[in-house]
Image 1 (cartoon, rainbow, N blue to C red):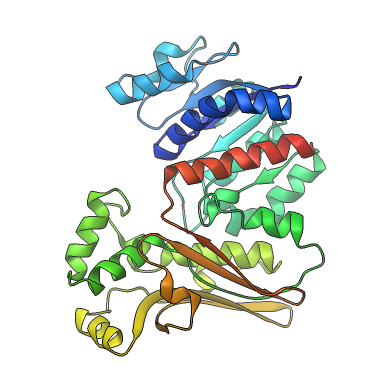
Image 2 (image 1 turned 135 degrees about the vertical axis):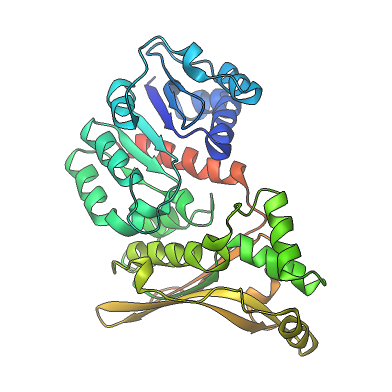
Length: 343
């Protein structure tokens, strides 16, 4: 029975959800996959770091975070100087990298993942930045070492988008992508349809933890641009940076425009599109009115949808209803299992 050592770099909502999921699935992983695991390292930005080769008690780690206590008390090693020293010292077989996204460069997550691969670890992330800025580089490095760089949760949380393409669409050529990929803007537009102002809808999204204190990454279309860039890079094989996406957010959409569209039988959505053009691709993120004959019309609140058009399957739609940290955590768990089973 293989025993796999895990390390978590980042222990916010997603990292904590992953810890709870690992505990919940521990018995079934042993029974169904003949696999056991331990967590040998957890590093946070504000709550300290723990490294223990014998394994960290995840229940205690979660309790410490909930009470505001540091994780340092759970460590049997001296506190590492930075995230890179943590990666080198944790002794893990798999690194879960869940630091905040950097749209412009993918750093420092990109170098965290590179360091993990160079140390002989499978590298798994929910971070979109490294996918759009270094997908080929990190995949090649992983392959050269017999390891895996996986990132299912980077787009549509835990919905199997990348693994679906990777494992079940051999020889398919993707010609177009279209979808509603940013749950925050979709929630804002849905609430504006119900009579709220833009400011009220944003405040609600912030109150429930969907939107950041500074919501510009969502409402100005940057998050959606990074996601369509990642999908184009991986599913079309065409490297695309967020700055190359024709991008417009939802700030200029007024309650009056929404009311007019609604009266005419339409709904405003922030729509992501990518079209193959020869050896390249063109992508956009734009507010658009969709009509009742479109699958995008029925996507409410934080639900998201992706349509993939290829030369072999026609149009394939994937819908994920009301995702959250638990679904993102499942994407990380699925990547972990796929990595160690393939390896």
